[in-house]
Image: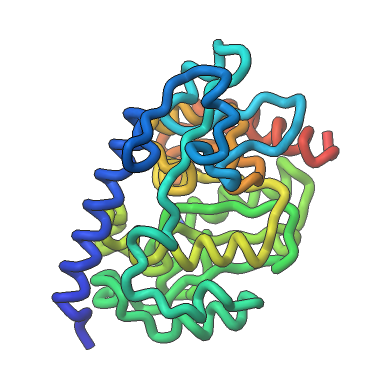
Length: 284
Ligand code: URA
């Protein structure tokens, strides 16, 4: 029943490699022999700029990654460097069927009784995701807590109730009109933060979920969702409140509802972010 220790070790190595590649990317290295310089010519260089990482053509400003702060004051916006995808790093054990699953049901079936990382040891139920498989809006959280682990559904505990209120009372939408999932699908013990090897093992499922749902907008709830999707170490306090791009999809990072339970004074910041989302959806 326990996770294979060799697999866990390899995942740890993959996560470390990934972090190393991220560090290189953030310091401007996008490939062997390539260094990103912030010049107009290189901004349009198709080799060093991942098409998937480019924001969609839109007059609205998008900022992404470690350069977000600088991008806010720069004109034209700072370039978005290529990042290694999960298909390149961290998916050593990924069955090709995960990447080719056509529906959420197929993807869930492929995940199966997952033993790909050590989180399987403490989980009761794997928490895949819930909501409209064709949702315009997806919320991505960090990982299941105790209530979610018992029920097998994301955001059903106290933080989940707050998220549901944000959706129903704040956005005037139904919870089943959106799609809700997490970066890691199994509960980290004692609600600790998910570790890099766990995120690396689980990220391909999130990537495929988002590819299948194809939302127009993603709201990343808290540090882990925002940093995982945007491939950055920039703190959530700096990421939130600005539009970013994830694979051409508009992404709004905001504070996690669990944080808001401890810091209710910051609810106003989340409300600002949600209002930006509502404007973008033409609902405000
Ligand atoms: N926090 C999360 O990030 N996700 C959940 O599903 C519940 C709490």
